[in-house]
Length: 205
Image (cartoon, rainbow, N blue to C red; front, side, top):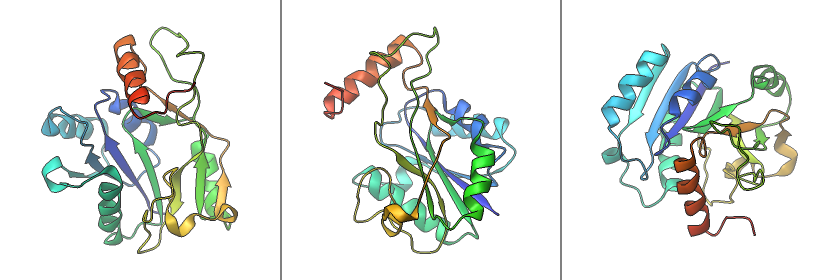
């Protein structure tokens, strides 16, 4: 099966951890830069190419003058339309799969399910500290792997990164592999992330 990863680079500097996590399970990596990213596009692409020998396709900010991230995600799906992908993996920079992902993707591929829903684990931190009582974010399962066919779409947006065509629960594989995040790895990153959660009204009460 040909596997393509769609990777969103945000302002999290630990995108290298994501590359390490998916480079052996991806045939191609397609990268987009979130509107929250303020670093050097060219430096990041250069670093990724040093980390990973797979085919890299990248789309800088000026190629994606979109109103929101859903629109950007939708444009990336249209890029995949022109490929011969069979399976698509989506992650944000700083997110990693647990090692069991390789075996579970193979099991999913043999099934009649169309998309994998993943729970998140507690945040990875540099000193082993708990982040606000080990909060989990996102708190709901997210669709991060799906079988490819042309003209899949996120629109109308239903949340949880669900492909609209695969929104029915009967189409979902409930993954036991979890996703972990470096969004709160350092104390400074944690402060910024918690502030963002509060700004969007997602901080647990």
